[in-house]
Length: 343
Ligand code: GLN
Image (tube, rainbow, N blue to C red):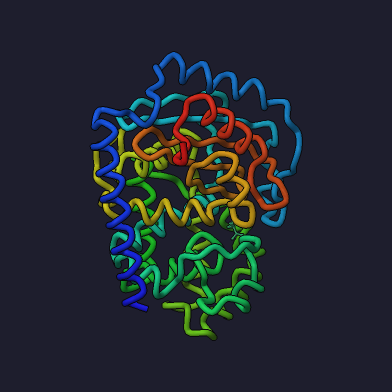
């Protein structure tokens, strides 16, 4: 396994060298991404908001009862550039639960604290092609937990978080989400209570992982911390800053704090690219071309490395659990501002 990974690391190093060489050959001053003006960004965000605010497809997730009660018409979009400028439109200051979007940032924290190799070995980094709460994927794929952005891998990732007791682990989880957002984020106690009362499936997933030796702390503690992490309240503004931190090489563009080291960002983005929108990750990458992460609360973040972090929120989700309006809005904005990583 180790030799195999080293081989891939060497290949990656070679690919980067070739890219650098071709930049020199093509002319080092070439700019790869467009640099839209502030007025252009404001215009495109406003257009996306007005174009998609009438879309009624999808429905609020209701397997967590509290999510069904959120006003489905809410719609906010935010974008942050690496120089710390934040652009907001619509309900960008409405607080909703972060849900699975938290998974990307806690994965980033565990990679930062325990290394990329540990993430690969103890969780896995491959896409499942299955729904986010799949039990079938645990049975079918030898790594069991598979990747940190589906429920199984995310609960296992929480079980890896360092700390001598649940409180210490929670301090690490909450502290890292706060650092990415640049402010102290609240826990939405109603959402937490609602999911804690109905999360039998996640408890089953954690037990199954424990049976396979792929959970690294107590089942009850891990599911509880995971549920609490998913109940953290954010706005689209917060999420854009969090995504903007990944876009700016791990440095929060608003607070200036280096939250994770730049060298660990590519691995986080790679997992987001292949698994961020669950079983629709391929369609998303094909249409939008950005690493992203969604949550059943209706939020989506996407990262254009070096250019911007973007977030959109609207509660109605599709069959895969991805916000319909947020997907449409981000796709529209990326097409107009540029930043698709494959361009
Ligand atoms: N807390 C949710 C769950 O475990 C998160 C799922 C999601 O956002 N896709 O089911």
